[in-house]
Each structure stands twice: as C-alpha cells, then as structure tokens.
Image (tube, rainbow over the protein chains, first blue to last red):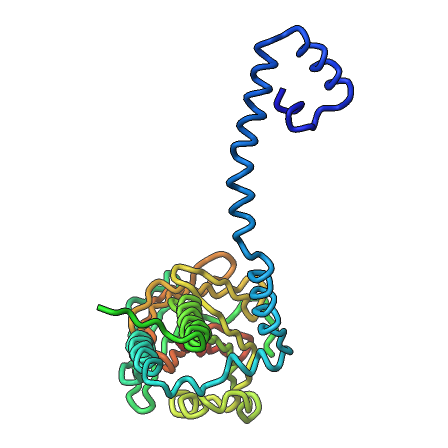
Amino acid sequence: MGKYFDQEANEKEKLLIEGHLQDCSPCRDALRSMGELKALLKVPVEEALQKEDFPWVWQKIEKEIRLQKRLKWWQSLHSWFDVSTLFRRRVWIPAAATFIVLLLITAQIIFKRTPSYAGASVVEYLDSPTYNVMVYQSEEPNVTVIWLFEGPEKGTTPS
Amino acid sequence: MALRRAGKGDDAFMKRIAFLPALFFVLVLFSTATAFGQVQTRIRAIEASNVGFGIDPSLRDVHRELGSLFSFTSYRLLRDETLNLLPNQTVLIQGHHPGRFMEVTLVGLRRNVATLRIRVIREGVVILNTEIRLFPGRTVLIGGPRRGEAVVIFAVSAHF
C-alpha cells in the first residue's frame, strides 16, 4: 500500500491494488488517511522552504571554497616552516614549555648512556678444563689480558 | 568569565607546530628503543708471531697495548667482526681453523658496564670459559690459542 501511495508500484502491482481497493473499504480508508497526513505535512514544510534562502547559503559556501585556493607543493612546504607566528607570546610560551619538558626527558636518557672511561675491565671468572690460564691486569696501558697456555697444535702446518 | 577564541591563523599554526615536537618525541623514543640494551662488540683476531716484523695498519689503536705487553715481532689482523648484541643473545664466530669457534653472549648490561661470557671451543670442547665486565671503549685481550708457530690474540671491545 505504501509503495502504491508513493507511486513506486509497477503496473502489475497498481492493477492488483486498485482491484482490491474496489472491494475493501478499510484499505480505501487507510489510503485516504495517508493522503490527508501527506497534505497536513506538506503545507508547513513548503512554507518553511519558502522562508529559507538556499541560494544565499550556497553563495557563501562557494565563496569559502574559492578562498581556499589550492597551494603549490613548495608553497605548502614553506607554510609548514613559517616561523613568523613563533614570535607571538601565546605561541612561544607553550612551545618553550614543551621544549623544556622534552629536553628533561631526553637529557636523562642521553646522560645515562654517556660512557665512562674510568673503570677497568674485570674478569668475573675464568676457567679452562684442559689448559692453564692466567689473567694479567696492566695499569699503563689500562688493559686486561687473559692468556691460555695452549700446547702446540696437532696436525696443523705452521704458518 | 568570557572565553576568547584564538584567531583562525593561530589555530592553523598551532596545528602545524604541534606536529614538530610530536615527531621529535616519536623519533627519540624510537631511536632509544632500538639502541637501548644493544651492545656493539668488536672482536678482532690478531695473529702474533716472531716470524717477520711489523704491525697491521688496522691495529694502530691497540699497537701500544700489544707492544708493551707482548714480545712478538709481527702482528697481523686475521679477522674483524662487529656484533650488535642484545641481552642473552649468543653469537658464534668461526675461528681461524675449522672446528674452532668463539661463542660470545651478552649476559648483563648495566649503566656503563656490559658483561660478556666468552667461550673458546675447539673440536666441540670448551677450552676457555670466561665472563668479563667490559667498560665502553676498553679492550680485553684474550690470547694463547695456537696457529702454527704463531698465537692468536682476540681483542674484545664494546661500545654502548
């Protein structure tokens, strides 16, 4: 019925519904009610539409679109690095605060990882089940030597 | 209290500028995450002998140490390996003869100290097992394995 009312029914459906409407008074009443409701809604909507000035709104939109003209890639790139606004107070205060926070965070990491050359290498343990081993710590130059007293090689050609 | 809205230009600029510290922060975090906990270990195998004279030009940085500690007349670089070790990662280095290996494991890393476990393996048998605490830029020399008439000295240093 809704499809018929909205004039979306095809010829076959139209014929079927019209045939049915001739014998069914509740359906005729329903169709009439739908028509009345449509008329009731149509009047205020049309009045509201007449009051609206759509061309004016569209003109405004078009104007905005025209203003946002497409920049060339180098112009766009340049605008990213435009620092003129940096000198405004409302920008440099939060920017400076952000920079200090980042500096504090990164400084901890950087200084933590700075190598110290003061310590000498330490041999925690040393073990050889087959040969004698020795550890020698030289102070000048500051170097640690681990020496394995391996016997002569078997079956190898001297170089 | 009246609220004042920032200008249109300011908004756009703030959006642009906000990305720069964000990008910097992300880069710092990324580089820290990748570098943190990694130890660059350099292992050089040096052949020391009394056959011939001279020192390999690539051993200039350890020339003083070698000269003052040992009485060999010739030092030749056999191999130079740089490993990026992660904690508990073991790397096997092929030795100067078949069947000879050096196994290097980073067993600990603290502020300025890397602890390395080094095992020298010959024919499947561990002939030397040691654990050393290494400071950045310092060199530990592990010598003794034979190579004919010469001996092999491993210069182990780390940077982190």
